Image 1 (cartoon, rainbow, N blue to C red):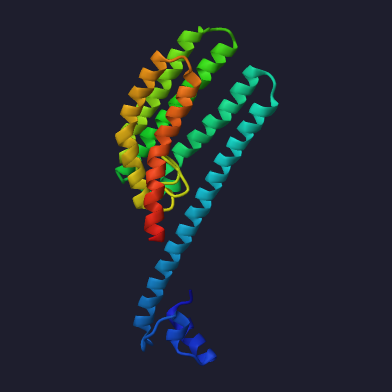
Image 2: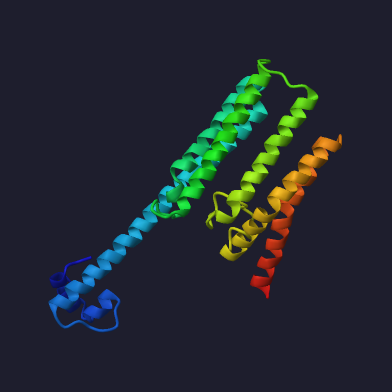
Length: 252
């Protein structure tokens, strides 16, 4: 951005109005008006450059998280030693979660002063704790440090899944519109109203579904099938209703 004197000289050389160089409709007749307009344009340019820089930085963090997730999958598939595979792949996923936590404000464009960032941070911390607990238990089990009977393993898994469902139901209605935490379906991340509807429904149904899951798991033998059906119901109800809402909203 040139200063006012240079801008006037450029306009004379190019034989065009100063307003055309500035991209404004009204031509300014004096240096003070030009200086004020240049200051406004410089501020706008600075904001635009800052926005682009933040977007580029956020994209780098997303790329790093995706890379670590991909490496984790490759390790799980290729490394034959169960303990080494578990520690390396779990470490990659844990590192990706920590990167997400440290860059939540950057990646969600929610300022640190906004109260909504608190629920995102709390949710991400819980995710990290769950990962750590899962990695530790799996490592201790693989190393034969602790052993589970078939019944105790079923009880532990059932309580673990039920607690995650109940926690998700509590925080879901409070989650702000973001593409990084929550029910990230193709239609929920495209529309804020659809997002809010899906998470309100998830908040309503999580506790009843979790209690029904515990009851069925305690009284039936097919634990794996019950868990699969429960997950499909838990995600399917808010996912299906929100999809119908999004379809009607976008297609009339």
